[in-house]
Length: 363
Image 1 (cartoon, rainbow, N blue to C red):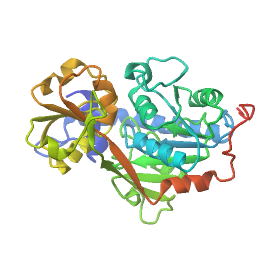
Image 2 (tube, rainbow, N blue to C red; image 1 turned 90 degrees about the vertical axis):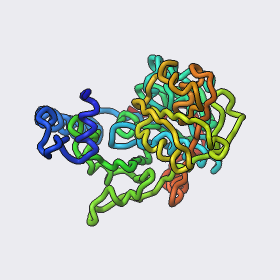
Image 3 (cartoon, helix red, strand yellow; image 1 turned 120 degrees about the vertical axis):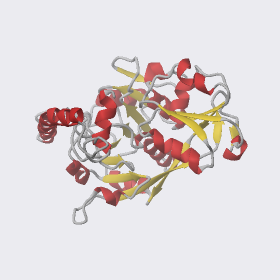
Image 4 (cartoon, rainbow, N blue to C red; image 1 turned 60 degrees about the vertical axis):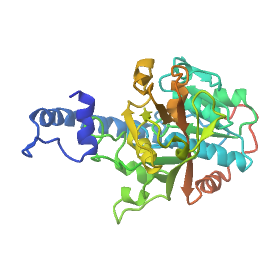
């Protein structure tokens, strides 16, 4: 078994993997013991870095518009991009003009770059491309989110709010609102990398402005006596399928009944997508791929004798390499209570009328 799946076992299954007789597998026990000191070191470095930003030893860029960061403390996807898309739509409906910045994981771009809806995933990354196509907002990418945000504001002077997709640990960008997202995997075994899946200690959740549980009650992340930030629940509701090659075509789950169905997902938690298909009454042959997987035609060849189903995030990558019948299942985020109203209240007091340029940036 490869190292990645072994780590996943004691990240998310609560204990060391065990043999059939119940005894820990010797290799996994050895691996766990070897990685534990590295986890302690990672914890110390993480705490030191956060302390350095908090006390101003390392500089943060303060933008002239409010900044809302959406992220998580667990590796992999937990629903950050659907939540960012929800906020973009809701804030636009409220009269704001948000822009979005993202890391652009998997892109070939150096420095910062604008994301065109006509770009390819290889150029800008799958999630930024999806956001550019679906949000109606200007989207910029860059490893340095502060630099990407400055470039966005310079290019779009009417933008009056920045949404940062997956930037909770990017402290170089000062923020007004922090939102952490968790899904049904919770916090795994509660340990930091590489022994566990956490990027920061679980106590970090108590320091953000809001915690969103994706398909779960966020209260489950905290002990009964712990003080908690405002908690929200997000449910991702499937919309109508649309054609991979022609998004103007739509179909329902009933239209797919009786067909030979295949499904692929390369997201943070692919089982969530496959479970949604099952809840729609569809029986599929499913194949999971790593998050941000760069698909090849060979990856999808197994579906040629049937109908391929995939996620919106995977769809932007599969469209160029798959010519068979294929449908994309988008999801709409529903938040309880209204997270956008909470964000609007939090940023009240910071100007959202526009910005006169960038002289207000401080580092």
